[in-house]
Length: 330
Image 1 (tube, rainbow, N blue to C red):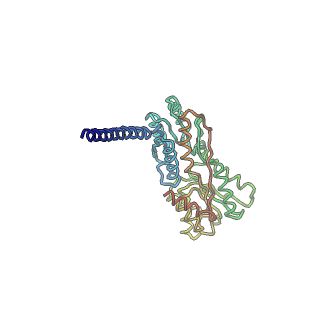
Image 2: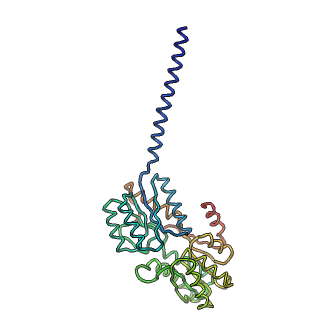
Image 3: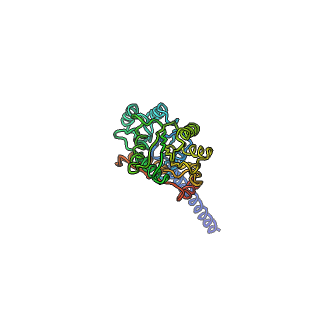
């Protein structure tokens, strides 16, 4: 009888030991898991509040880089092309105690004062898509504006068969310091045309981004330049608006369009032959490299002063693969 009691006691003791062991292990695992989930850094990315394909894809790249590096990536949207909103957002970021900030400088002089404050606080800084306003000692990531213009010009030559009258539409002012980015694109186009005496730039137009303004301008161009053969546009949102005017005014096949970006409407118009082609920045890797570079800085490692990301040339021959990529991301 005593043997049975001893056996039962031994079994109960073993069970209790197992339960205690499981509880201790469970708490340890939960603690380790919770510890691993604490972000290493807090990075703030200041973006434009615009419904464009670029920003959607850019944020996806930045968010994925954050997950891989175990950092918290916070997006702060500001009004598109608003200097005041940009400065306010950057100032708030500097005083919010974040570890790193990625942003686009709208004004060199006013932004440099905030950069100095951020550097004094040991905040890592990086600009992106920003050869418009170069900031000393602040690394940058993005596509090269001159290359964008040059590629658009080369594609335009193919679109018009190496001869024709050209209208260029740039988003924003094309003169002065604030227009440096736009001038680089324009210079790239002019250089692409330099060996083609039969390609003539008739007029250069500038406008704020937005469909309505674009459609109004395009109608005016067709009325003022009835023999225009080619339109180059450097703005993502404006490109589909230009195409729609050609459709409405029965000018498809008469006037060729080379645009910018990979909005779904743009890809659809390329497939239909309304737009000849488009130059598209690698928005995903711009966002991805912004976060990756900031993390590298925060880890105490050196990075390159500038990283130039890829540009994609999209036309009827390859538009289908970009539509597939876009659908997968959606």
